[in-house]
Length: 298
Image (tube, rainbow, N blue to C red):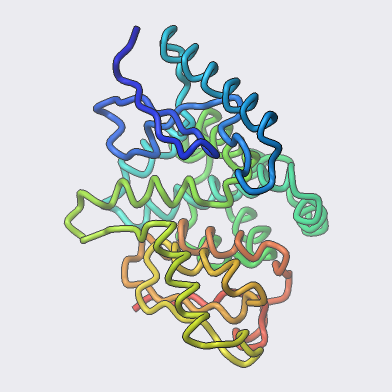
């Protein structure tokens, strides 16, 4: 039996992890459970809750005894591609052009409105169709308004580094898992932390607490001519944690500023764009009238 597993639970939620030296972050050590969400103390029937908890714990015991934990973080190819290019901002950007396109295709496979939108723009079933003409990735991608990602410099034609099947399959499946850019953001934070750039992502619970405190201080809903601006947006954790405190915010009321260029693309642009996925529009219009999140790099 492996002794590298550890479990975290408040009984309503059970999370299982397996330590491995090569996986430095806690999220990267989390393994899959058939159903980690047990229920809600306040609303669930006691007997039903108890039965689900027993089933989840039985799954944990089975995984640990037989050492058959499967990591939830499977983005090994995109991690490797980014680590190899972390010191070259142009190549870093080139990695994201085809992978973001494929990631969005994965999300669209589970999101009817997005699927309809990209079909209207003539997106292919896979970015691999454009590997011999990568300028079309930028052209089609811009119609969906991820303009900070789908721009120059574009990758070279037919490059194995940017158009290999394992990499594209990996990011498509990640998108289909409906992580909405959170997984990519975690990888980038993980890669940039040791670089000496003082990268520390805000804890999710703290981010939501700050949103609640801001709403209480304001004492009302945000009006249509007001914006929420994060001057040091990083990977976008604060700006993607506004709900449920602010539940009426539109995409054009979100302003993000960040000095680190590796954050302006995924995760910041992708994370915020997918957070307001229902506002994606083919029109490119001035930011104050647009449905776009306002990004700046200073």
